[in-house]
Length: 353
Image (tube, rainbow, N blue to C red; front, side):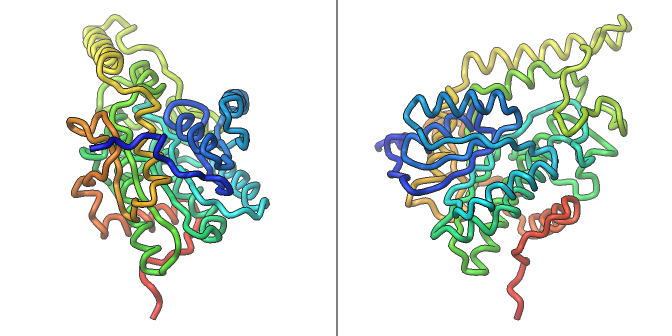
């Protein structure tokens, strides 16, 4: 059977796309291919310097219609400013790729007081999609691609502690955020179907791809998975994500020494596993590109690699974990996201009679 690659993408001339986190990794590879296949790409990145450097590389590679616009998904104010600039263009958005994210960071808060992984990975993209909705529904057949992760398989949504105020573990929080992304993608599909809107909402995951997320996760000094959720310790300013702090064990206590050893083992496993088994970022981006452009993809699909355990390979339709198909939890999460962000999505759960 022929494997789908970026060479199978259709001509995207005349279409507009927004890719979050487009300055590196999966986002860069996605923005690159979309632009090189003719799309006008708005590359959304938090760092103007890194974002503009990425946009220049894409233009040099032949994706001439690529521009940077600054976006910090950890700030609702930044999301609003970015969205207003896009809507001011009065240009329909054909493709939105909700890709940017952070992984397994020590507990920190966004500019708006949300746990950073839940706030950036899920709430930020929820608010962005809602604010860009007028441009999406103006397109003849828009695609919203929300990037999840295989880690969603072990994720659980704690609606009573979404921000990890009572109990926090950096991997638990990451898994919750990526499950939330998947629940959002499937719930958005249900709602647009009920309203008969020309929008296709799908989810994708890259498998195990070598990006800077793994490197940063290996370098995070976060202790164990039952860290105390202190209200202010380590919170970064202005919505920036947390930077690694001192490695555990520097106080020379027996417990500190054990934590230092465990931390070193975890970092070594991540770094070694990435080096030996991860597929390159361009291949990890294929499910995202397939989800965003292939005519055969239908709303509510979940795309991922076709290899063993879904860790590498070429894109195919995969099954979401059972908890991602829980419509009741998805509806409650949607309501919680609207309440937390103050951004009301123009899609009620049911069509008024």
